[in-house]
Length: 111
Length: 114
Image (cartoon, rainbow over the protein chains, first blue to last red):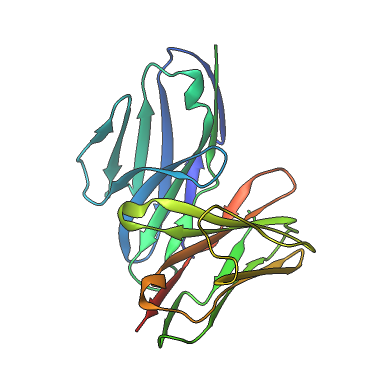
């Protein structure tokens, strides 16, 4: 059965801290892994990763995929209170079930 | 963990026909379900919020007569794309909110309108 696991499920840090969120997956016919930031309405797309070992970066956020380990990490440096959200990891499959979402990591950044 | 089942996973239809997509929470009751449409570059747009027993709340720009949403029970919400046209071809995803406020997503439906 396809599944995506995220850790930690919840994290509380202070502004300025660096955090690393983890996502591991077991999916048949892997196509890509996506990271989203969920605040109020629809999840906001952050990154799509298809190739192993290539870091994607956007401002203070970066992510990398390790296909050998079937995992990905999302790093946020110099966290701000506006980073408080649920971060979702989703894996896209080629066939059958299209998307498998992880449970999310709830990040709280305190001032 | 909680499971949200979405069917069908893929559908191909002719222009002018209607398509129904189902979203079911399998092991929890979901008073609120959400419907999204995925756009290029994988961004998700919220289309509507569906509350059990009441009318759905549509986001600005989403045609309520075009995208009919029914939340008949605490475990089932349906999205019907009426008189589908090629521009409606997209990937549609639902999510359901559990009692602890966590969101669980369906696996999505790829709609192709010929």
